[in-house]
Image (tube, rainbow, N blue to C red; front, side, top):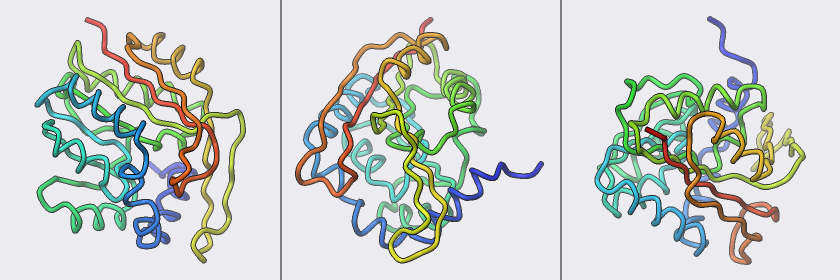
Length: 215
């Protein structure tokens, strides 16, 4: 089956900019106090369970979770990002993979995190992705989503001096919560924050939701 065009464009874009992206954003979690607090709360909820970082990028969030106790592994569409993550964090398994087609057994995980990675999923495909997260979580397992807040799509034809075609789709927290609840999740925490002054990311509000699989 041919790969969807949006997925191919996302992979190619991040392959092209992996090195400079990691240099600029590879320590983003260290600069954002509230994000670390949310990730830390998620880590406490899942304990030492198996956790998948879906859309792991250069591996910063996976590495932070690993230090907090969960048995974490990461997947990313971009082979270049996976190579960077493996090099920076050799104690954590990273593989090329697609969050829209998870190669994980039903109920195998205690946690899934998609940290600013669902923003690349076209809206019609997002319910399928969330159902996939629900499928691989055991009953009582936790999901953490991070996203930019808004109603627009920020399209980039250039990044770090490279030609790309990347769409950053902003989401509304109420819509994310409604989708999770309709898919069999119970929302246990929702955080909305303004951009932090030391962040290198775009100046848009940020949202995070932690949800538990019912059952």
